[in-house]
Image 1 (cartoon, rainbow, N blue to C red):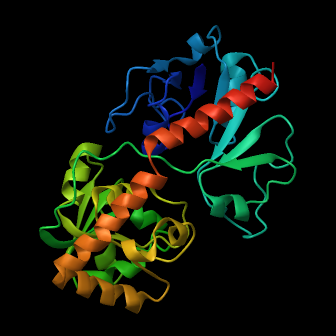
Image 2: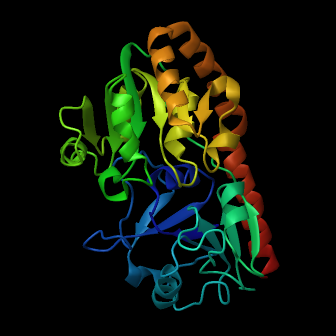
Length: 327
């Protein structure tokens, strides 16, 4: 198939474009949010090609993957065809609902011309999608090229925009863990984190930000840390958490949203009581054998449940069903 999709979420798109199709990724001169083109920090295979809005007018497109409400109008404008009406469309919902939870109405609610594919069962449960058909295709990841070594008695955190999102990403909880072990934070918008924590009344914490590293380099750095810390209060299941498990890292995480289902008890420590997670950090910093046991179990779970082949096969089935139904 020829599949039109925007580059929105780098890790998820990286997995998606490893399939057997041709992926048309819009690119604009400014490489803004609706024309980002191919990833720069993730390795993408050749079937993912950049295409300009002008070229889409005559492009052969079998399916549109929508990920933001405004992409409907963009697709209609650039293709000259309406997603869901003139060309099959699937809306991928990556996020937990915002606002009046659990009564948040999805922007694609009560639609009879498309299907919503959630990435977690938690998200499907909490979004109010009305009469729109829904399904769940859980994440799949490209296996990291490195394995956990854990030689550094430090914690790894992977998150985006922790200063702006603050309580959502659990940034306010970081000082409690930094008093036990240094925190190395990877992702977008993390360079300003130490200064932001200082302004919030936590100066001189051992917190270091590594801003937007290429994926392979980030994996190599994360794998050297003793454990992976996941403090997100309200977010969809982060692919970085699954990648850490796939490397064989032990996980310390808030027991919120889909994490409670994705990380079994013998692969990490999950709790809503922060004191429990702080004590788990002390334990894993001193007991490397325990960290290794938890990480080994996490690697098994990630391989069995979040493998790339399963992910792509699930998407192939869904896309075939949706395109055949429209013929």
